[in-house]
Figure 1 (cartoon, rainbow, N blue to C red):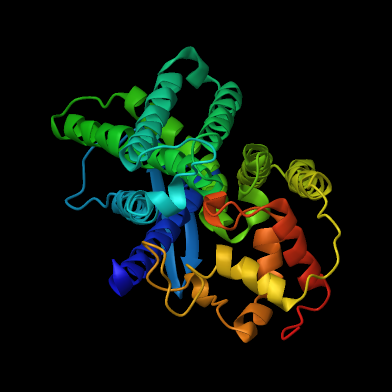
Figure 2 (cartoon, rainbow, N blue to C red; figure 1 turned 180 degrees about the vertical axis):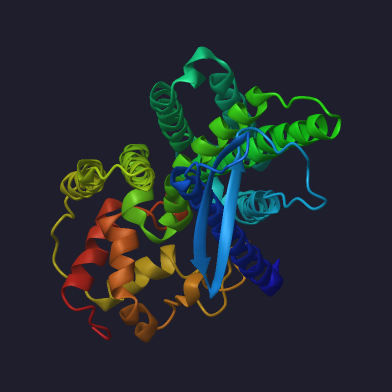
Amino acid sequence: MGEWGAWANLAIRWLHLIAGIAWIGSSFYFMWLDSHLKKAPEAGEGVAGELWSVHSGGFYRQIKFMVAPADMPDELHWFKWEAYTTWISGFLLLALIFYVGADLNLIDKAKLPLETWQAIAIGLASLAGGWLVYDGLCRSPIGQNLRVFGAVWFLVLTAAAYGLGRVFSDLGAFMHVGAIIGTVMAANVFMIIIPNQRKVVAQVLAGQAPDPALGKQAKQRSVHNNYMTLPVLLIMISNHYPMVFAGPFSWLWLAGLGVAGWTIRHFFNLKNAGRFEPQVLAMGALAFVTVAVINETSKPKVVEVADPGYAAVRAIVDRHCVMCHSAHPTHRGVPTAPNGAMFDTAEGLKGRADKIYERAVATPSMPLGNETHMTDAERAQLGAWIKAGAKVGS
C-alpha cells in the first residue's frame, strides 16, 4: 500500500472518531432526555412528557409522545447515519489494519498457524455470530429482564474475548471483541430501531393505531446500545495500552474493565433519573482499580541480568525490530516506521528506550505476535540495558 495506506488509515480513523462522537453523543443525550421529561397538566393526549431547555442563546421545547403523534409532520429527522457511518468506517479500519495486514497484525502463528483467508473468515464469522447470539438473547425470555440479559451478554462477550485470544494476536483479538460490540450496536439501529420506527410512521399515515410493541422493542435495543458505549470506547483506545491487551489474561482485563464501564454508565443513567447513588460509581472505580492492581502484581518479574552493553543490544534490536522500526522498513506491509519510531540509529534507540521497555520487556506485545521469536533472555538483556541508562557506544 505504501504511503497511501497510511493516508487511508488516517482518513478512516478520523472519520470513525467523528462519527462515533456524533452517535454516542446522541445516545447519551436521548437517555438523558427520557429521564428528564415531565408530564405537564396541559399536555395533550398521548404525550409522555416534555422538557424546556436552553442552549447557545436559544430556547428549546422537546415533547415525547407515548407511541407516536396523531399526525406526522412533513419533515422528520432520523438518527441513523451517525450509527451507520461509525460502523462502516470502523469496519474499513478493521479490514485495512487486520485483514489487509493479517500476516502482521492479526495472525499469531505461535497460537494458531492460520492462512490469511482463514483468519479473515474467522474474524467475519465472529461479527456475524455475535449479532445472531445477541439478537437471539433479546428475543428470548432473557431479553425481558435487563439485569439478567446484561449478565448473560457479559459472559458471552467474555467467552468471545477468551476464545479469540487463543486464535488471533493479542491486539487482533481485542479489536475483534470491539468490532462484535460495534456490529451489534449498529445492527440494532439498522435491523430493529429504524425499521420499527418506519412501521410506526406507516401505521400513523395509514390512519391506524401504532403498535406500542414496536417502540418498546426499539427502546430495548437503544438502552442496550447505551450501556455498551463505554466498553467499546475502551477497546477503541486500548491499542495504546499493551498492559491491557497483551498477554494470556487480556480477556480477564477486558472483562473487568467492561464491568467498570457498564457500572459507570449505570451510575449516570440513575443520576439522570434523579437517583444519586455514589456507591454505584464507587463500584465502577473499584472494578478499574482492581484490574490495575491484579494486572500489575501478576506480571512475571523481569529477570535481573547485567547490562550487556550497547553492542549486544544493537544486535538484538537489529534482529527483532528494525525491519519495521527504521527509516526504510523492509517488513512487508510496513511502508513507514510505526508511530515514527526508528531504532536503526543509536540516538533513535536511546530516545525511545522507555517505550521499548514498555512494549518489549514489561509486556510481550512487541514484536507483533513475536514473529521473530524474541527470547526471554533477550528481553531481559534489553531491559537491563535500559535500566542502566540506555548508554550507547559501549
